[in-house]
Length: 268
Image (cartoon, rainbow, N blue to C red; front, side, top):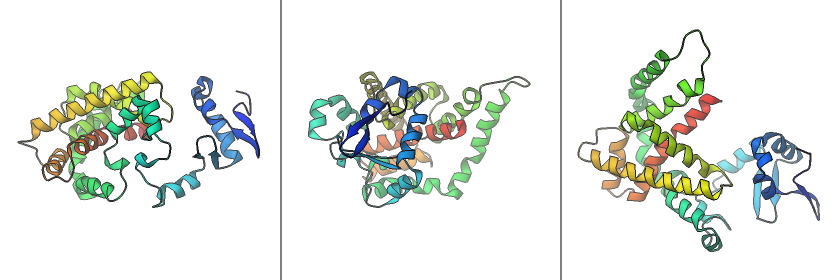
């Protein structure tokens, strides 16, 4: 890739042609050298054409992410996916995000605290300790299957299945759903990308609908006997009106899909 390939002339000097770069197949194969070059120019770049700031520096991003002035709710993004113009010009994107929107990671206060509060007590150290035997058991099961004295793919044999299996156990989902749910999670991970192809949008929307439909049926099956784990917290919040149905479904999907972050951490 030639240097300055994605720069164009501006009134105050060179500007980054972000949208050409972010959709360029060669760039997407290995974006890191070009991103490093741009970050070395400055930690923050403003794209006048879209009104978007690209924050490249870790310190700068941390400062931005921690400020109370920075909201979580993308419904309020200027000229974003929820704008009337985008709703008209790109209905697939609008339908995709509006269906995924109602959950704690996308909500500003006080809604964020209302939804997060449903699950807070399940993640206190003393409450999480109850799951340690189950986690050790799942680790042992996978370790026993590893070949001895020969190379193996760590992610395929251990890194990928472990967090998925633990997530299924936490939500009392049968193990035979592991492959299906892993596929849904893989598709949903595209929601974090700035650019998606029309095919990717369709796949994400389809997987999100299928995932939510499965969770809806799973909650119904356990409604009479919810136990005392994460499922019981979700059902109780739905019953007492703390969360509506869409919030309940989306938050359960989000928590199950959170296995993706552990998977990535192990890979790194």
